[in-house]
Image 1 (tube, rainbow over the protein chains, first blue to last red):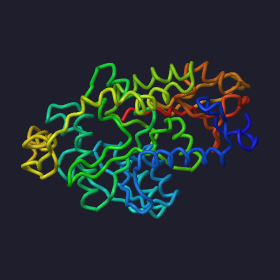
Image 2: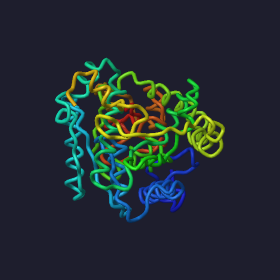
Image 3: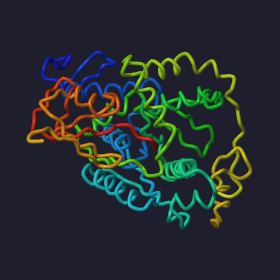
Image 4: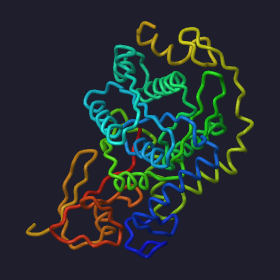
Length: 301
Length: 69
């Protein structure tokens, strides 16, 4: 295979673009897709301070690498979930990355915050682990971003993630979620920081390829709590469609963002946010779900 | 097998397959029942495209790219 741009030997084939690229032109393509995402959704300005939520996985570390390479002011935030073995190994990848690139890294720890790892917290609260994990990560992302006075929180959500989420929401007719799904979540309250997904135009395969080319050492093993996640099923189904009809995932997601989402606009509820009675973070209820979960788990607030 | 190419699949548990080569990457993935959209194929520090022929005695990694978290 030859690079579409320079005819040198290609290192990656992108069937959805009917193209193959050499290393140099693949990186050019990759950076171009991120810049396009940032520009189209006005995710952040050149001199904004960005807090990148990093897990040690390929998407978040690739995102951090891209933003630093493109000259953005990007610091990392790693949340230690206290999952024995896995958390130590993922944290090591993040520490190594930050050290190698001379990047600033913030670390928050679930165990230090609550005395329990995420697995124990979920068990005591009698909630699904992924649900509790997501809840606490979002709380800590926002808190750290507020305390550090960052302009945006960036996460490594990619095209496969977003397409799978879209598929799940459509299959279950979660019209409220469909109205809100976007690569940009605006700050709807004074103590909320906007959240952006600069990798949303890129597939997991493309991101993994980028990480290998840039020698980003990421944790390959899956989070042990993610076993059996529905999102993997949806991704596999979408990839089967992609094999037969390249570009399916992008048409599905981008078509929804451009045309489909407005159909559900009426489902978007304007909610009044107030400060949680316990922690002060924005919530629609008296006490936010994070604090309610902690109370259920018997954690003293 | 006296000579074969080695395919390492690191997750969910590390598996090593021996396949009679030489064989194209696309054919290797088909034999393993893996989707080319869901994996990257690495030899040493290099990515391999589907048309590349992998010789006997070579070692490649077929690394799943799909994550659930």
